[in-house]
Length: 327
Image (cartoon, rainbow, N blue to C red; front, side):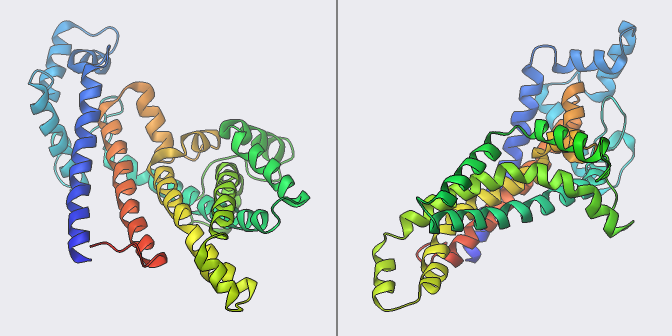
């Protein structure tokens, strides 16, 4: 187990380095980007040639791209340690603010949104999948299937706008967006996040329910399930100990990657619709302004959580299925 963890940690570091380098290279080679284009955007529309040259020298744009990459990663490391002056930490080209500080500032809203929505979509996704599998072929199963397909097909931004308009702006049942910190008021924190949680969870509930339904029906025909039933075990115990436990393995994979993706900025549309000022919204603003340091920072932030949760998923695999053991 220890050797497995060591290998995964080494692989995680290599993945983060590769992701950061690919992101940097794409930024450099994209038309309109590169050192010259970035310096011109920082300088502004009416900047002189000398100002553009000075900015290129200040940010290291007049050096080879691999040197630029090394300087950028050094600043990211110094910024993560929260030490060094302005010239030594990762600073946004456009806002002149510390990138890591901005990401940390947006993490509470993103984590609050992701955790609450994950509880909803995992709980109701499993519930929907089990009920649909137990009642397979009946009217209730068909109704659940229709609702699940509607949820999967519904665009997040459209659902968010509709819910916000009818339940917040028009009828004032819920707050009209924005984020309230948990430390400020736990009640207001949850009250402001109810609509964002529902908006983000609807898509995953339908998808998880359909995947789990198929897994349960397939697992029910396995030999070890028929053997358990032949031994006289109750239907509930067979479902809980044999069918559901093995059917949840693909769900764990989906949940780990989806949850990591949401934390890593995957909830851009939800955060933007409800004005939550999380990491996703910060990433959208950085992409809109083509600002390299925040793009690199958010990309590494998202890649870190995806790698972390992939390791946790592997460990959960080993627990749920003894045949899957890391060696």
